[in-house]
Structures are given as structure tokens and as C-alpha cells.
Image (cartoon, rainbow, N blue to C red):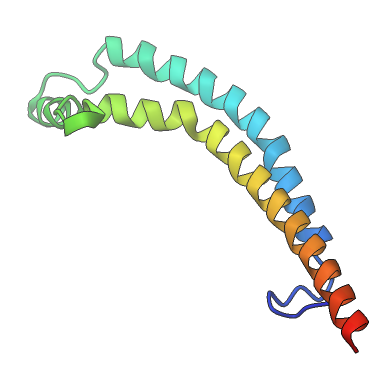
Amino acid sequence: MSTYLNLPDGPEPVARVGDRLKAEAEEFQRKAADLLLQIQDLDGGQPWGHDEAGTAFEQQYHKPMGEEGTLAHALQERLRTAGGLLNELGGKVTTAMATYDATDQTGGGAIAGAV
């Protein structure tokens, strides 16, 4: 077994982490969607108020940020897409470990056959 990545227990435990990330991503996405609805409902009521601090917050919160739109929009978009990104990360971890294992097995076999 290769020690290039220092995986003394092999790639399987790391691959299971990838699988867990993917499973958790689904629940995270549901919770994030609920939270996003709550944020959007609260935003409509301007909960920051109209005093000096509230006005300063609102100006920053609705300040354009280039292609991202406003800070409010950018934050909500990140929340909306976070579960998908977590799922994608989990898939990449799982795929990387499968590739690592296949490469390690193929390389080990080739070395053994050359000796």
C-alpha cells in the first residue's frame, strides 16, 4: 500500500467520509432552504430598524457588490447553493479515493510483475 498520502488504514475510511458528506448535504440543503425562507420573510419587514445603526446596516446590506448583486443577495445565494457544493465535495472525495485505490492496486501489481 502506498504511503504517498499516508493512509495507514487505506482509502476506505476517507471514502466513507465522502459518502457521509453527501448524505449530510441533503439534510443541510433542506435546513438551508427553510432558513432562507425565514431570512427573506424577515428582510421584508426590515428588522434592523430605522435608527442610525439600522440605517447604516441597511445601506451595507443592500450595497451593490458588482456581479454578485447586493450583499443580501450574495449571502442568500451562498446559503441556497451550499448544500449542493457540500454534495459535490463529498462526491469528489469518494471518487478521489476510488481512483487512488485503483491506481495503487495497478501500480503495485505492475511493480510486482517487474521484479
